[in-house]
Image (cartoon, rainbow, N blue to C red):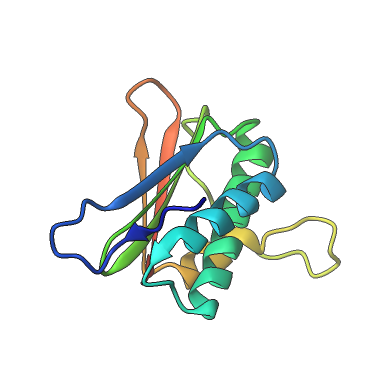
Length: 136
């Protein structure tokens, strides 16, 4: 039985959930399950943007930092927040996309275009935290 994570009750606490995905597919499944439990449900476009954002952030952490130490999702009345923690202190860098399809370069610009806010900060235990907010 699923319990919805209500966000339309003024007395609610923000919905929160966390996992340690090993792949971008695991992260998308986790995000889809999270979105399915929100009440009211986000618009289909918001859910698709959430899945794309989670996929890109997790893929970047796996590719450039070697691991995802945590994926945290939260939602309130205004935003759905995605927080990806990884062991590398190196900040994401934008680069020119490789149009041949071999070198990437599309992910970070996509993250910045999808999210209305992106922050990067050091993790207290080492590494970094990348947080992105989507309009609810």
